[in-house]
Image (cartoon, rainbow, N blue to C red; front, side, top):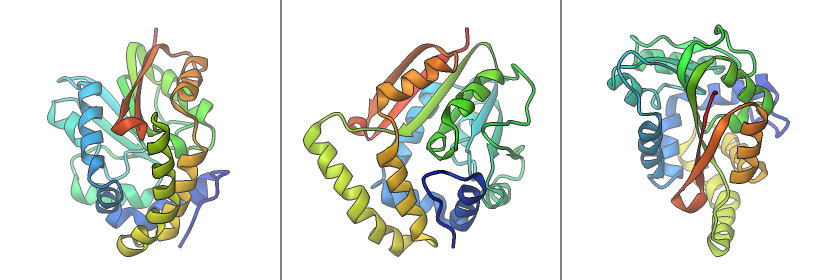
Length: 230
């Protein structure tokens, strides 16, 4: 079993997600105490997919996150660099155009998509700035980015409890439900090392995105960032 390190070597991260692909969605529901489904609904609301729109769902994994966009009539490309995730997704949703791709070098032409989105995957890409610039490149002018990612709880007492859960409670729970519990130790560590809400907003602006804003979910455990390509 593979556990990636915080320098996020692409082959390590991809292999780690290959290991957990089969039970990934179920494990996330358990570890998030059911909040993962709520977060997916908020992403779908923010993306606001429409018929005939082209949407890139980066780090889509098994494409659970892509389904609301497809149901709305949009053309959705689920993209991930974990071949294991893509295989599981293709078994579940054989009609979808699954695409293997690195978030820093997408196999896509300039200005292809109306909306680009990534949920809980930006944190796992080695170069965050390069990924945000690449998402900008493949988005048409006037198009949007929607990012859902773990962040920093805004209420200090809750932040302390949350941090304790991540580092103490999450690993034993992961051992009970995941095929690769060490992967979730990495995930907990990567959440702790990730920028806060304002920090990610600054990175988006540096990559060229305009009208950058965010909304906290579950008290800031997760933040939903948005931006526009001018």
